[in-house]
Length: 68
Image (cartoon, rainbow, N blue to C red; front, side, top):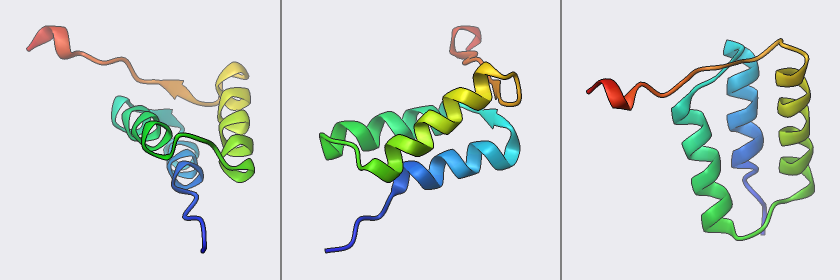
């Protein structure tokens, strides 16, 4: 059975647009909840995302739900 590495794909999307949007973050959390584990590939992708955020190269986009 082949793993889809959805989290890695979501991280790639965040890296491409240089933003971690609430939608991407929610999709990552949903995948983690549904899978119940994280593959090595997805874990490495998340490590890279966190490193890029720490370095200031990826912007965290806030949720503005309280405005609606």
